[in-house]
Length: 579
Ligand code: ADP
Ligand code: MG
Image 1 (cartoon, protein in one colour):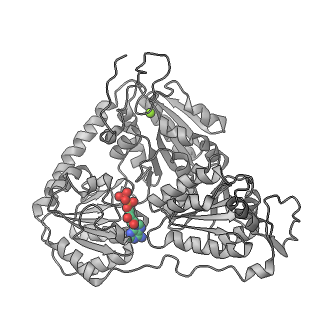
Image 2 (cartoon, rainbow, N blue to C red):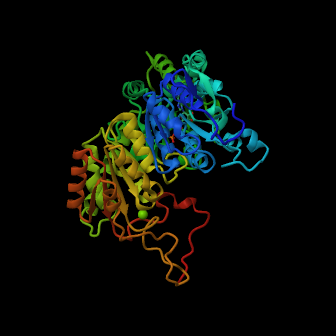
Image 3 (cartoon, rainbow, N blue to C red):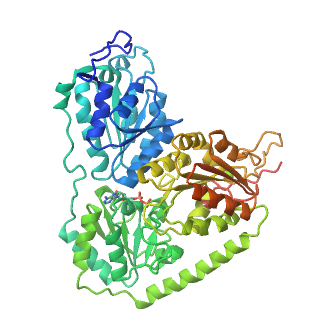
């Protein structure tokens, strides 16, 4: 084993009789079933990426580790298998860790593998190359973290990381792959005995019959029952079971952002437009794979104080987090739904017949009003968010198999509110942390994991965080169309510097920027559109071509309000400073 990070005297192994830790890593990933790796190479992991290609993995090289991590996270969400991120030591590791932490928060399975300087030297603070105590940096932000100091430990580390990522509540796992382990040479025959594939890595645990009976009793006794679908339900790929539950028992449902399409947004039981009514009037809500967190007003305030929550979740600590849960159903989603459907057999619902009818009437009225709003907006010049969406909505809705990636402030809110989804797992957004800076990475992960076309609807600010990885979309020729809603600012482009000076306001960006040229710089088709006709034409062409495309959607600078729908989260109302 090498004890310094200077490997200049190391001999190359006599391949294939001998292999390095880097090759063992590649082979271990392949043997557990990983096919795709997202990363950004440099010392000490460059050879590891070559080895990955050598053993037949697809390696996707990014421009920013955070975006490679967002790709891995989205890959994990869409496939129920860990997305894999490869990073270099120190800053590369930390750039990637942002995405791994975000994956953990959102319950997406992924494994970040980072090269690391010799831990013996790091621990003694000898000032080695890219010195950082990476293992302890990662630990509080991930589900499980471990370090390989020896090449012989790599196969087990990979197999255990795989199990940790996908079992129980899915999340991010970190492997600190130290330089000595990567550099170590072993006899290939000796390594052969070390590889193994984890048996039943996501062992499904069933809830108790008592928990199921309690849930069934509350659901069938309710006068105003409702179902709340979250991205945990979408992740679990139990689409048919949810459809059976909703349709057989005629229960209205509300979908959280990324659960949109799990059941069709425009379906007869969809109560998407009746969110407040559900909160105020439902007396039993079955929460399926969603957390009763800030996005659901913590289950209090706006909610009927007498509502009984039935909560299906794999994580026991999720129960009673903000409100007492009347019927916790802790267990694997698929087994839980099987048992609930079995328990419901032969039972009749006590729901008021007027409940569903009134929700359907409310939906119809609200949807008509919304359609009217889009029609009115479609004439606006310059375009505003709604003008652009009046064009994008029908195109995306008639291409339901396209995956929609969406981030921004107003761009996020308005796109989510206007575009109906009709297929599960076709909407990826900035999720529970409501972060900016996942767009290009998630688009790449979605395109690679599914082979489907992707359309990313991005605010101009949001796009800035990940825009350079549009180059990655081009390099790998992925069928991704990016729409940048250019209103020249964070929230909007009309911020004023209250000092009266020339410097841009904190929210001001570049209203005259031609984002399409970024696309063209990397060989994509670029479009700059100022009218609805131009937008329709560009999006139609981009989708038909399946080529990387970047559309600069020029909006008025005054389109969009401060913080979009969540202005109330600002610490205090903004003071209108006069210049
Ligand atoms: P949303 O943001 O859509 O409300 P959340 O991410 O808040 O969704 O909640 C998803 C929930 O789903 C998490 O509490 C997670 O533990 C749970 N979950 C994820 N996968 C499964 C599964 N296979 N079985 C049961 N629960 C799951
Ligand atoms: Mg903007």
